[in-house]
Image 1 (cartoon, helix red, strand yellow):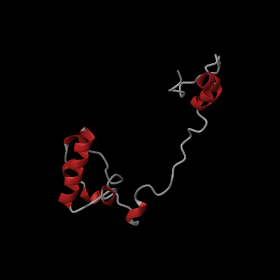
Image 2 (tube, helix red, strand yellow; image 1 turned 45 degrees about the vertical axis):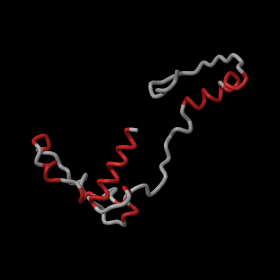
Image 3 (cartoon, one colour; image 1 turned 90 degrees about the horizontal axis):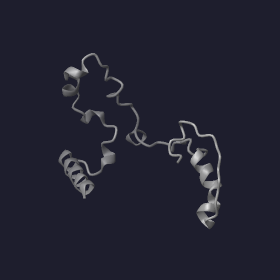
Length: 108
């Protein structure tokens, strides 16, 4: 319910600004109220030039231009699921001993 109301408010704000889709404003740094942000006392001494930089490219190239390759194909979880298939599918007892590192966060 909450997200429905958030979406309704976003639609209303976009319509107020003359847009119909969120995609139309993604990457449009001209819409940010920069002066108020930069004049805040916590922002003194910070360089926002890279954050507010708008590249000279077509709008379509600003967001999701290529699929990313995430290194999740060979995480320990996948190996554990494969080794535990007899337990998961046929309810057979399984004992697995593997080294666990601190990067294997969802193990257990």
